[in-house]
Length: 177
Ligand SMILES: [Zn+2]
Image (cartoon, rainbow, N blue to C red; front, side, top):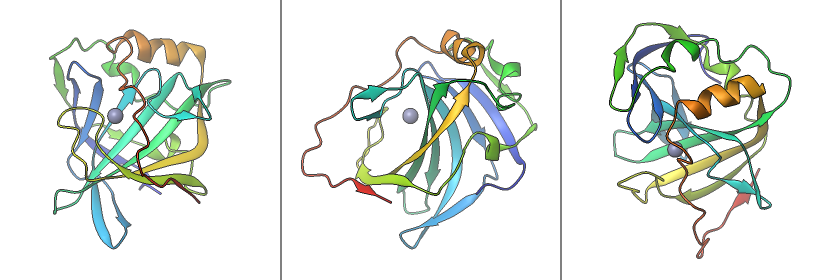
């Protein structure tokens, strides 16, 4: 779904996560609104659980519209035999909290986002402050396969357990597509 290569602008360890910022990220159309890719970041373990199961890694692709609404695409990572996914990640793992690095490196997000065929969708909030309640969440059913080495690398370079606990579902409707 993403263009082959997207130019990175900055990589930052913001104290919550390692965040990859994009200046001219790809865009997507969802519910008749255009959302631009702003950044991706990681959670470990995952924030979403599927039937009670928590995954070692979750990646959030944060898109924003000009109206201040968000669409976040989420991919869960499981351990297995890795395809060559995170070759862009290794250069940035030594960033300490508060440190950032400006870069014009191009990254291929197709490899990190394994597909759009089927997903869960619901309306919710951001999981980090200000936790705004204007977010379309899309959780892909396809899993990203990561080696134990990559999972360890991501974990070691993020704050421990940087996930927000699961929230009451209230009167939300979760759609499966
Ligand atoms: Zn997140």
